[in-house]
Image (cartoon, rainbow, N blue to C red; front, side):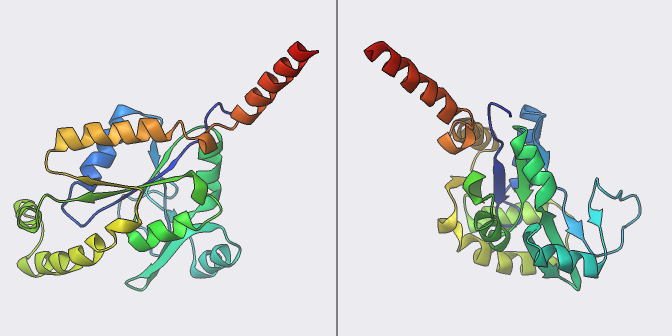
Length: 214
């Protein structure tokens, strides 16, 4: 058994708030962190590898995993199912490795309500302003005006659920926000629920104390 149980680190934000950049910085900071590999019923795209980019499975198998409680969270998006298999995540955290989840508020809620919920750390990333959020989306030069408009409309729905997260960070300065994020992760790793050997250690202290009273 590892000295530390890993965390399920949930990062959520509206598109353009900096979530992906912060997640990759976290993995550069600690290379033991990894993204949860989602399962999907859609066909692989060119260059995608099974077990690396996604676990590609059929609809019956996916639905059976959901029925058996083997999905931490799942959703139906644009005609395909997506979800986070519990088995690999549980194995990772039991060996002391943290797992990152890039999910929306609905996925975060499902993970918190799962069997592994007590090991979750949920963090919501806010933009410094709606004007800045729009500027960041436009500066990407990846999306059409129509797509940007849809992303902006969706952003408020995401932001409205900020109160259901353990921590909320305003990403007004990327370096400062990342420093705060590292502080949160470092502290949360020391939670009592994350230290499986702690109870045994305290029992040893109790036995030592009782021996000293004889």
